[in-house]
Image (cartoon, rainbow, N blue to C red):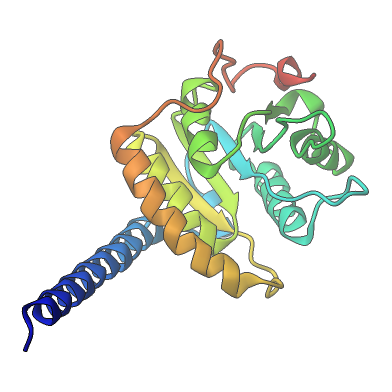
Length: 226
C-alpha cells in the first residue's frame, strides 16, 4: 500500500474516532442535564404544597403576528396563572423577548394574566429574557429571587431547572404539556444542542445581554412596566 494511501486511511480513522467521542460526549451531557432537571419536576398539586416560592417564572416563547400568545405560550401562561391562584407564589415573573419595539412577548404575557384576574402589581416583566439561560440568570441577579417555580413544557424544563440549580436557586418545575405540539420532533433535536450549550454556560456563567439595577420580585410588578 502506498504511503499516501496509508496516511489518508489513518486520517479518516482518526476523524471517525474523534467524531464518535464528540457524539458520546454530546449525548452524555444531554442525558446528564435531563436527569438533573427531571429530579426537580413536580405536579401542580405538589407545587401547591410547597412553602411559598418567591415567584412563578413563566418562560416566554412565540407570540403571533396578531398579538396573541402561540399555543405553547398560552399553555405556559395558563399553568402559571393556575399556580398563582393556588397560592404557590405571590408573584408571577414573565420572562421573554422584548428586544425590539415591534416584537414584545412580555407585555402580551402580562396582559393575558391581567385578563385572567391577576393584579397588575403581582406581575413582573423581564424584558430581556432572550434565552433560557438569561431568564434564569436575571431572575436571580435582577429580580433577587432565591426560590422559584418554573413553568414551561417538559422538554424545556430539564434545561431551565439545571441552569437554576447551577445558580444556587431553590427551584422546582411544573410542566404544561396539554397537547402534542406541531414541530416537536425538531424542537427535541435542537434541545439536545441547547442542553450542551447551557451545560457550558452554567460552568462559565457569562453575563446576560443586559443587567441593570435590581428590581426585587417581592415588590410592585408595575415597576417593570414600560
